[in-house]
Amino acid sequence: MKFGKVGPAGLTRSIGPLGPVGKAMLVGAIAFGVATLFTACSSTLTVGFLFVATNKQTPGQIEVYEVNSESGGLRTIPTSPFPSGGRNPVAEATTPDFKTLYVVNEDDKNIVRFSIGTDGKLYPQSTVNTPGAFPMAVAVNSAQTFLYAVDTLQPVPGCSLTNTCPGDLAVFPINKDSSLGTLISNNTNYPTYWPLLLTPSDTKTVLTPTALYVLPDGSSVYVAAYNATTNLGYIFAYSTNSDGSLTPLNGNKPLNIGSQPVALSSDSTGTYLYVVDKLANTLTSYTTAGLNSGSTTTVASVATGNRPSALAVDGTSFVYVTNSTDSTVSGYSINGGSLTYISTSTSDTNPVAITVDPRKLGFLYTVNFLGSSLSGFKIDPNAGTLINAQRSPYLSSVQPTAIAGIPHSGTATAVTK
Image (cartoon, rainbow, N blue to C red):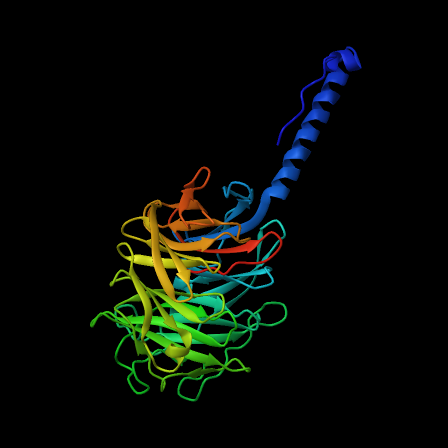
């Protein structure tokens, strides 16, 4: 924003000598004008809001950042942060109408619903408990009719972090006011959830869930998990029914994929599923049709950095992976299921989550747990390379864990943790 220079006559010559009252009125008028101009600029340049969960405090906090359309720079809104409604927030999801944020508080096994103001402020509305313990992922379908949540432990007597058991997947209907209804029923053995079991009868082998993803058209739901004893990774595939119930595919058995899949996403058509493997240090693509029919044939697989943790897809051209140990972001071009390495850029310490900007203007952000910060990048639209955004990294309070975003107006972005 630029201000014009005073003309040759100057202010004092134009209005004549001023007494104390006149000077005060002039100063007030100028201050008001400048404030108005800056407010207008801020409103014009703010094209989205990012919601970042931090888990050090009790309760946890949600920090809210404005996204600048010109630079990609971030700044917290004046009333940020907001209490998350529980301890240790670890996952977030927004509704497609941009009006609601759901926050998962792991240690209180709850999901808190917030309404989102036009200025990005958060207003807590209601809280529900998940059926099991230590929920770790959440997703909303594009029709805004169902919310999916994954628990680390099933609601089985005696289950704890020292006496582990398999995880579960639960489905909540979303009411018209975005509140969550009663859990969708599965069967008499598992009335309020779908168990993440190695086989339908195996309740002893512990598979630890790591990620959740719903296809853009809402037709399929995928959960990633792994066995810490055998270092074998798995993908659970479900088709969705109109009443919200799920039909387990592949004979109600997970598919063995890699060692420790920790992040999932797809192309915009839902034809290919991209999977990040933390132990194998790979990014791999599969056809969703193949996974749904029991095939784990890879379309393409490329190396990542050390201990990859999350991924984000930018349109139909690029996918980016955070490497938690290396504190870097690796970029790849995509053409359907094909993957081609582009370059690697440095983030702050220990990136654990990533998203593109809410208006898809070509900015990328990582959430850095040990760095207690966010890193921002500008995406080259042709090459896919990353350039540090203005003033990056942006300091967070402490230990950020997850990120979700909405546009100030326009079309929303998919957010991947």
